[in-house]
Amino acid sequence: MSEPFEPSRRSDLSNDDAPMSAFLPVLILSLVLLGWFGFQALQLRIERAAINEAMTNQEKTVNDSKKLRDSFYAIAHGAEVLADAGNPGARLVVDGLKKRGITITPNPPPPGAEAPATPAR
Image (cartoon, rainbow, N blue to C red; front, side):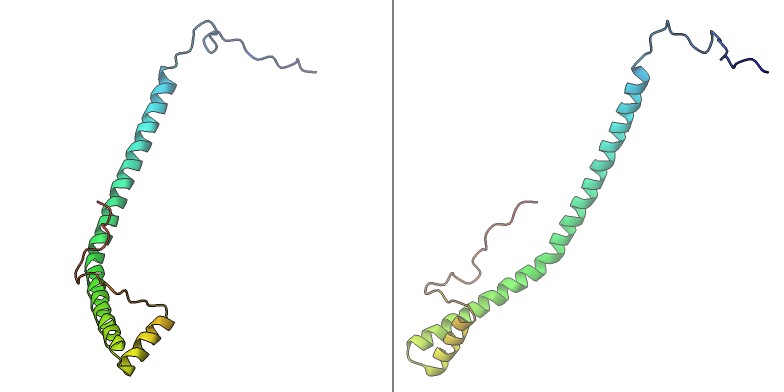
């Protein structure tokens, strides 16, 4: 039969007396973290630019809806004034608005008054 297998004992492959340096693993870890943080910063910058562009594109729509809301409020307030004066058609309109949950305040804000402040970009 054959002799049992014994691993070779080469002194140049295993040197247990020399301490292992932590420089290389720490360097690799630092480079990986630096790359990851750089990637995240780039992604956040791209997303912020996309959000700012979306907000800019919506400004016209928001302004148009504010104008429409102001004109509707002016018409509704005028109908309420007529209803209080005794106009039956205006009373019907005001009652219909109240059924749909639209309330008309007695002291309207001036047209074009600023809405609550939007967060700064």
